[in-house]
Length: 273
Length: 327
Image (cartoon, rainbow over the protein chains, first blue to last red):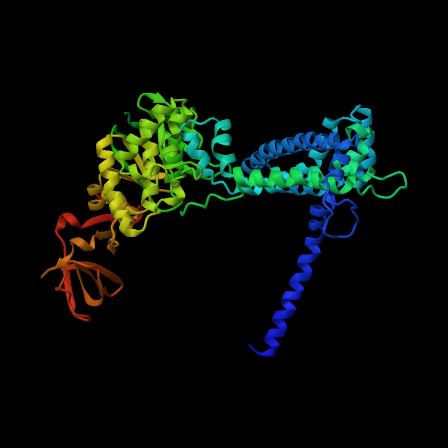
């Protein structure tokens, strides 16, 4: 217990405290500001009230935007997970020339496909397809952007499922569909759960695509609506924003807890062989 | 119950390798049959072709009187145990055993009943609710066997059934496997690279090399009269003495050689290896090294000059050119 050791110890804990505060302060603001009579940008012990909550609920678009977000994310997430699972299985099991190149190209292009650079063509395409202001169309574009990365990640999980599992099921008479649903997907379940949550969180926080493709404020998801929450003077509407932010963050947390508990990010430990 | 008939079967991989090369084989109903050979000899490919996991390029595979060459694996009424057992890790032992019935859409209650009955028969009764990851190697092997038995197939195929067990468990599992096969009277083909395993388990053995069968026979035939020098080299826990003499190669198993007044080989003792109840003595006979087995406590001392001989029936002659047994 030399003096140097004590100094280093103190220094270490100070550093940890600062880092912790950096992440904790916004969380504490999210917990306190919604219930404060005069919510500000600073952090203080709140003067408890529920007036902000009812004000937020009275706002014409807040609740509907959350519902829009849920619909948009549900479609995008389901499309991404289902298609990624099927594509990952196919790409993992079928040997085609240039398969890896195809995957890397897809991954590379995916950042372009829904990246900022492609926004104009996407907008024009959606306009000609008559899919502007369509939740479904927007969800498809979001899913399209997420698919390459989802396939890439999921393929690794499917690759790890031993071929003998499938062959075994096959010898006992399972059809390819049964092999997929009885054996491959359950064994790759941690991967599927990961992709599901990842896709949902990504779609939930996506701003640019819905902002461009959903012009009608009644169709806009929460991520886009947040930007419009200003009062007449042009400054941030601090009665609505804190409560809205809190509501906005709940689904992601709930989804994580649910998936983690129900489907588990746990792995079925490998069998010693 | 049915035998297996294989006629002029070839399995060629896309890269042109003929893993199984125009092979004929007949496995009798209820027989325990071993495919034995070094790695890469095509024995596993042959087994997988019988199962339908590899497509036959030429020839016919029949089970009983049915030609199954073009049938899907699931339609052949075969059950297979894989080298890694391939137990589904997300299912319990009971669910694993009942899986063949689940695929066929058998009622849940029948599935459960079959799983319990089969598990009892293989002393897995207490482990039905465990997952494969919670079982020992031996238990996993029995669970995989139970699943194959529950499929009530006509033919049981085993890919290296004992190779994933440690040495001690292997003996136990070997006895268990033979007993189970006798009780079920199920036509069983297993693949192994371990000649001792094949000799101990099988009713008949096919020794394979380069996609062809080198010798087909009972363990005794294969051990006593190897058809060629390849089989002679491969079979036996101590390698056979193969000594060129004039225009033939003499083959004598170390087990059949004993000190004799007038013998085949004379040399000085160079090495003595203890094998437990016996010892393997190596004689230095000029160009050749001759091994022979002596009982415990009668090992000669190093450097002693010994002459060994064998009964005439135990000395085999192989053609120098072809390596085939000269009758």
